[in-house]
Amino acid sequence: MINQLKAWLGFFPTFGGVPRSSKWREVRKQHLMIQNVCQVCTTTKDLDCHHILPYFLRPDLELESSNLITLCTPHHLLFGHFMNYKSYNKDVVADAQIWFNKIDRRP
Image 1 (cartoon, one colour):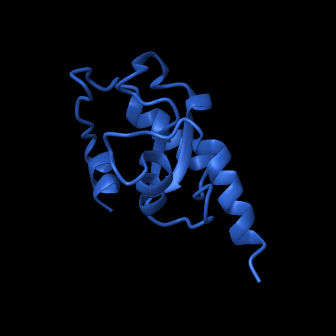
Image 2: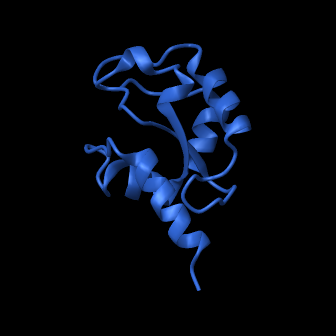
């Protein structure tokens, strides 16, 4: 919810001293319209737009749709950052698919 409020207000902080592009808000909005469910659990609530390769490492990929994945807030922290926002998961897309399949096929 906090991320939604920040997005609505147009507030995106700097990361590693690199300011967000003025186009980020629109790119994020478009991405969430296309990929509108968490890629792990398929919820449509509290969605985050996660950078596969982190913005602080690759600011040049900030607006690239191929570098984005939709995750709900809990899965963003768990799968995207291994429970620590200072970390990142380079295999987040594959891991999201694995866990989606596990959830989808549960007894």
